[in-house]
Length: 291
Length: 293
Image 1 (cartoon, chains in turn brown, orange):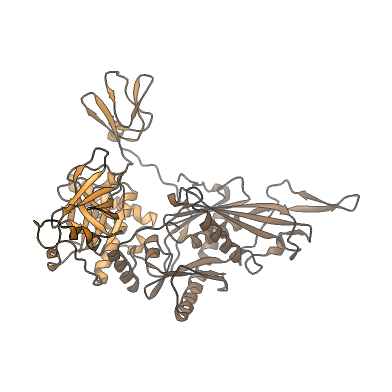
Image 2 (image 1 turned 45 degrees about the horizontal axis):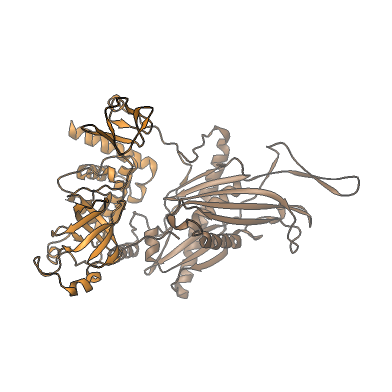
């Protein structure tokens, strides 16, 4: 991932600041940077969202396609993730440079979102064992300024909220086979229930404390971080440790508790904002990429 | 614990005053500078149907028959005497490579630094071996441009007690076009922190040093914790600098200080919210106008 160089003295300054609960940009340890969210950005997707968090920018597009369900779960649809690390974000991603990070991110996203506790996968089923909706979730990293996981999860939740899947009507034809008919009316669509979709909270252990929404500089001072995905009820659906350093059990417990608290608090303003944007409908002027 | 989420807002187009419109020396790509063929084509221009046209957005500069456009969005083009803040990227034979936001890495020669223990000391082979003890990769320095090589790379020097290795503080990276050229780029601001406005757009904020620190020849860095009040001032200044830069206000000690004063009614972490930023910058610009007029 994009890394920055930080001198020893700068590290000491950041470390002491976090100890005193006053970070370099004036935030406390559990504060997020201010976030901008816009949905329905890309016209040729079924749902899309762009999230900017500080200078981190993530664009998510969701395409729905009809496929055969997985044989193990014939009555459920599924999600597929692909993370594209654009070389615009950092020159390190040029060529195949972003591939490794992209796979790592998409595998984590798959674990977090593709289970029945986060998404109502049954609603994606059209006819058991034969047809189901597959949601292709494409994530594009436009800029990296730390805290990719959180920004991505919020963007995915917003994009899922925005996703409109056309309704299907199944009719039996003369020979007893099934015929699938898609509705032509753009307003006759199915919306996804995103209530249980989790948000990811990344906690970076810096010194003896942990921070959420770490900038690249803070990330450079941290040895290990914990990724926790939390639903609006505070249920932890996935947890991962990243980074080379070690965490002692006590601090893992503390960080999980903090992650649950912070994660729970993320959902309410996000849903409020998404509903507000929805209610504005066509009257809202889109900002897009040049705003 | 707080997450501030919002819809993005459309940036209002800045209403330019009439005087700015009439300024013929400000051009955008495609603007015809002159259709007179008697001029020579310099940087940032091209000839399109016998007309000299700008290829970058910036300011037109004329030297005799040569017309150049100095771009506004650019990397740092150093000149002799510029104060810069930079980061060491490499330690080489007798020299350090320094990242200064220029097109090429700058060079800091071992012979152009003050070594601890006297200014007029011969540089021995031992000094060469212990270079990394003075400055290692990642360290920040303040320096002055000593000369410019033919390829545009800069040669720096730190042969004055005011330059040298930087200790605890915060680096803010901005556009070099936003830094106003002044007599001095080192300021001890009355709000309780010091600032180095590097000409290369790197701004260093640090707690105002005490007396004893300045004697160690610039290689001593204190790792004592900075007091919470100093931290708050520095964080506030950092956010103010970013706010000013976002609204393209020229940076010098007065503008920074006015912005700091205008921001006092807000919490430090709120300064970077767009509406607060706009309000603070407006107040600052007003104060600057009053002071001028």
